[in-house]
Length: 79
Length: 308
Image (tube, rainbow over all chains, first blue to last red; front, side, top):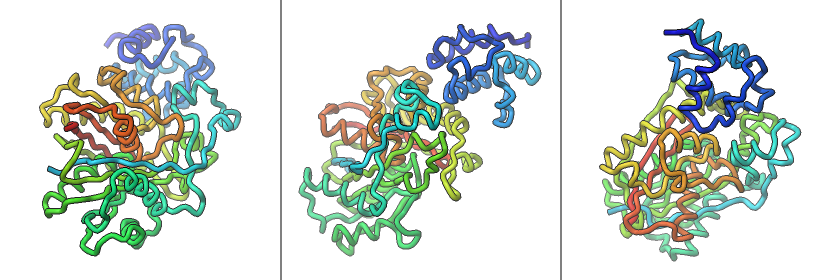
């Protein structure tokens, strides 16, 4: 599988869910919580990521995935 | 054929405004209205029992139906917060309503999937035993167990009760059911000293499991998704109802949502939606309805009903 990027996550999420509005405006380096992504949005985002990229994200990893960049790195390390 | 004749609901008079908790939990109005979909929560009186709530719902039902209580031969209460561990709450309801000794009474210990399970259990039980007139109560006041300092649960749950009249001159008849369980997820929604909910796990479970259950129920009923006229999902939150609508790719206009003024009432959430639609004459003969409850257990149940 080719390396995943922040852009590919955004493209996948946009195609799979209408619930995460303005996802293409997210800054990959800034904390998601500071960009209007609340706990429900994060649950949806992680679910779509798991389904799209075939990775499992345990609950105890979530605190380490505060930015889109960290999620990208996690996928590339674990897929 | 046995089916649903009527549904009545009961809401406690006390309500709590979620906007009063914005600062405590760091949420805004948009989160309350567009994400969880709860602006107010109904809360039962401290000394109000589950039996009291059931009886209040029955009073509403009786006002519309003039039921001869001596003819009721089945009385079931769906609750996981019974008045006592022993006896079953339906026995106390039996006493309060003055039901006949020939009436079968039992409780069903299920949460958000409980109403749909109960529809199947009670309809099948009554049919198998030649029973004619039954009551399904739902009353699960989570105000008894919610931690008021827990952001995951304190803003969501409301107290309410419902009663469904099951009998031989129904308005709604069952076409199919689908059931499932995932016991390995039981710790994700559990009451030990207070209620604990792993919001992400419960959301993920519902989003990934309910569509398959719905598909099975539709298939068993030989009904297409597009032929469903009203969708009644358990009102866990606006977010999960929106998620299911999107994942099932269904017309949002047909998806019933109505929890802003009272919250997630657990097993009462679906019957309260039905009650409103019946009372406001939203349903027409020939309509197909899809009911789907899911949650604690983890447990789920879906059903297709037809309006006669």
